[in-house]
Length: 520
Image 1 (cartoon, rainbow, N blue to C red):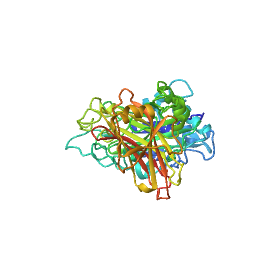
Image 2 (image 1 turned 30 degrees about the horizontal axis):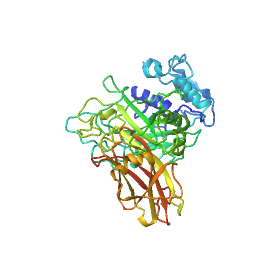
Image 3 (image 1 turned 135 degrees about the vertical axis):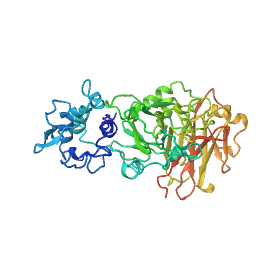
Image 4 (image 1 turned 120 degrees about the vertical axis):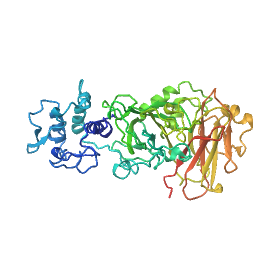
């Protein structure tokens, strides 16, 4: 199993950043007497990895904490600070200002995060990061995770009424999201959301195949498009911003899930799932992060699926079925709190899904109507594979959305003559919820397939473009396995394939996309 390490960016840097915000220093305003040092971002030229008026906070290639000025000036504020505001730092004992300078305090955040026993005090984690992790920089990196070109840029303003001052928090479901719901979010929001898988260097990994013993990060863009500040450190009236992330069995709408540990935990073994975003200024974006340890996620999903039957999983045990589908991520990010009561808490939508639950803290809410939740369901699809008996199967979990009949439809730009689209359903589930109502017009049962996704399966071939496979209400068995099969019959221009899940009222409640890595 991968050995987890404390995240520098999410756990260490973000705490230093919060202290700077609280002290109104070193973030958006540099203080000349402190060398114009900046904590605005880790990519700032005068930031942690750069050079300020005194020199470089980190000694290049030196992994001893006492040789790095950043550690020395922070540690000095906790341990016998000098009479003056200056302390000698290596390599030449140049005098640097102690930060934060105790007589200018108090600094409850700084002292609080450095209270208690080692080794999970903030200063201890900084030392460990330098000496053990060798200054591993896990700052989020990628098209929509990059601070300079995207995160630092304000989202479009939320259309507020005159004289309103409110926080409008949202998980970004598309690049220019500003939290307006409903009507603005693309119907395939699971494809467009700004939720990414990164490695321990913070680099976007695209669509990795998750393997045993591996560990990744889930990084999600959140925003505040209102004109009010939020976050517990701002003042006594602004609310705490808490965010969670669940890893689900690959699915369209809902499925068994486990909570991921927050990357803000100083103890890398801590399973606390709540990520606190310390501060969101008005008109801003930021990135929250969670730890995706493949082995622990697998064990957690196996535990919550313990009661699943062979009939639900097409003749497979939960362990055997999960081993076939755990190679792809299906995650939901949810903002639990951070707004004072206002007319927009539930987006002003009386028909928000589902209507019988509180939208703002419900993992079953839809990103299309609830700005507090985002969903990412993507799997890789090799569009270069073609020929008979080369069906590519993607298993997924079918779930009941609302009440009444649900439907599945396949959407793709691939020409019908170039692809055969198949859907597999466990025999017992097919007989109870598909065949019983004769609800599969546009699909025909077939036998001539080179492979099955699970042993006990009825295979249906889509015969009409846009056909909807209707699934009768199955609330008493809310989850069962299905699979989408794609067989390419000739060479075509690469294209994505999406499975779209709708509720009885026709509303899109979820789906997933098979993304072609060769798409032009």
